[in-house]
Image (cartoon, rainbow, N blue to C red; front, side, top):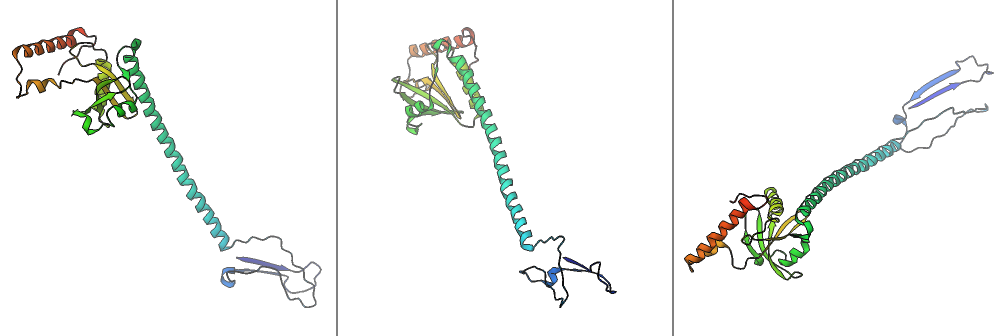
Amino acid sequence: MLSLSLCYGAGNKSTDDSNLSYKVDLRDVLPEWLTIGFSGTTGLVTEKHTGSSSSLKTAQERENNSNKWELTAGLTVPLGIIVAGGVVAYSIFWRRRRKTTEESEDIVSLTSINDIGPKRFPLRDLTLATNNFSDDQKLGEGRFGCVYKGYLSREGTIVAVKKISQGSKQGKKEYRTEVKIISSLRHRNLVQLIGWCHDETQFLLVYEFMPNASLDYHLFNKKRILKWDVRYNIATGLASAFFYLHEECDQCETSK
């Protein structure tokens, strides 16, 4: 929009109207590209042009400003989302790591009194011992995970490694219970807990390996029937272990 005003000087003697004002919408009369300046045809009369103020915005300038705003918004919004997501992710990671550390410290305090009892194994040692938890090393599978045969080269010992299934909350609860309680049990007829591993999302228990297989294998083996005196020794051994669990140990357990 162009607003133009014209007036004569104070010394002019013209009797005609001395003021002229007119507004023009330049979008209707000007091309897309143009050069702006002052010009006039005055003949022999001297003419002076004075610009008191000017304000001009073109479509290209408005488009550039719009593009800049869109670019700024396009960069700011994703950046804000990334920063917020990073903060949330770090907060979750820190809480989980803190919880894992507290659980590990709690277990360590229960199992490492005077360096007696089970010890903590690095995950890499148990991974190597079981050939990366190979199916060829699998001894069995239960509700909360699998048991693998392993060889600890540093200790020169064959062990049974119980790996808790990832995502099993009940399995993790059982893991903590076994570490806390079984680590304090000492009886000749109970399998000894040698160690444990609590590494991020991995929960593993290391037991002494029983090379003669499980009790039910011998009791129900149709190829070889156990003699009466052997069965009697098994029964008295079990009774001794049950009595210890129910009456003699510090944390009495109810057998299943």
